[in-house]
Every structure is written in structure tokens, then in C-alpha cells.
Image 1 (cartoon, rainbow, N blue to C red):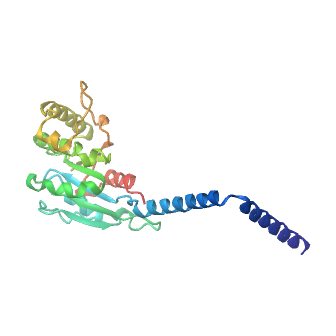
Image 2: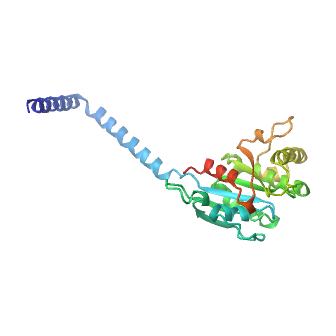
Image 3: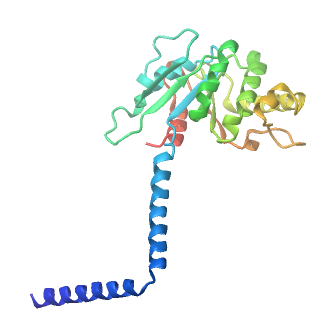
Length: 259
């Protein structure tokens, strides 16, 4: 008991000294210090209120027939839905990735958007890019060479969009349909895309319609183009929507949409 009484006495003495010290401070300084504390507190409160939460949106895009919609369903519920037809409207939904549905730990839902690849429907992509945490650009690894020009042009347009460059939105080039024996490897596809995009950036001058709209160019002048030169991270992976081999896509999503 004596120890407690002594502790109380010391606390009271400390408080009294604090009060005496405050009384010695000129009122102007005291009010100024209080105002600074109030404004600082208000500033941090406002920042926390208006800070935008990190996006959980992942956009699937690519040419028609590349297998985007099958990947969408595989990610959502683990089914290919016995194959799909070309989408004319975006498929979207917020869900726990199918591979994580049975995990006991808390997992952040992902908002997945499958944007149609038909040229006339591609403007819909611009509706989702501002909120994208990542872009999965799906390539048909089986029919890659016949579509090389079209794939490269579409990818070039995405990589030069201001909404992608300024926010440094990561892009995964997903080589789909790799279950086929005649499918091209991801390394081959990567090299061919780099060569074709190098030709595109040379042919598209800095004042072309594409660059005026996007205000960004790719690569380093005087050097052959490679994806490593992009301001945002561009990686390449493989998938097989029909056989549920989508580990590269799932890893990309979790790297950019944290649980």
C-alpha cells in the first residue's frame, strides 16, 4: 500500500508541475500550438477519408477467340462451361478465386472483367482500365502467327494508353491453349511480339493519331524494343483454360490484388 501511495504522490506532483509549466507559457504560443495540433489531426483525418482504396479489378483482354471467357470462368468457379462463344458484352463479377475458395484464411475478393476482343467492342476496355490493378492480355498460342500483326497492334495500343502508363498498371501476356502440341512457347511468342512492336513504333510517328490520343511512346529511341523498357511491369506466362492450368494467371492476380 505504501508503494501505491508513493506512486500516486509522484503522479500528482508531476501533473502539478505540468500545469505550472503550461501557465508560464504565453497565451499566444499556447493557442498556436493547439491550432497546429488541431489542423494536423484534421489533415490526417481528411487524407484517410479521401484516400482511394487499392483496386481489386483485373481485366482480361485480347483478340476474339483467344480464350478469355474460359479463363474468366476457370478463375471464378473452376469450370470451362464446356467451351464458350465469342462474348459481345463484358463478363464481370466479384469473387474469391476458385482455387482459394476452400482456404480458411481471409482472402480478398477479386473483381474480374472479361472484355470482348472484337475490334468494334474494344472501346469498352477504356471503361475498366482506370480502375485496373492488373491486365491479363490473352494470346492464342495455337494460332499465334496468323494473328501476330493484330495481337501486336492491340497490345501496342494498351501499352501506350495514358491510363496504363501513368499508373504503371502491370500486364501479364498470357499464352493460352498450351495444352495443344503445336502451340508456340511463351519465349517464342515474347520474342515475336517484341520484334513486331518494334516495327510498329517505328511506323507510327510521334504525331500519329494513336500517339496524340495516348501521349505515350514505347521503348528507348535507337534501341530494339523489349518489354523490359516499359514503365509498367510486363511479364509473360502460360495457361490452358480447357485443362484448368491457370497457375500463372492466379499468381499474377495475387501479386497485384493482395489478400
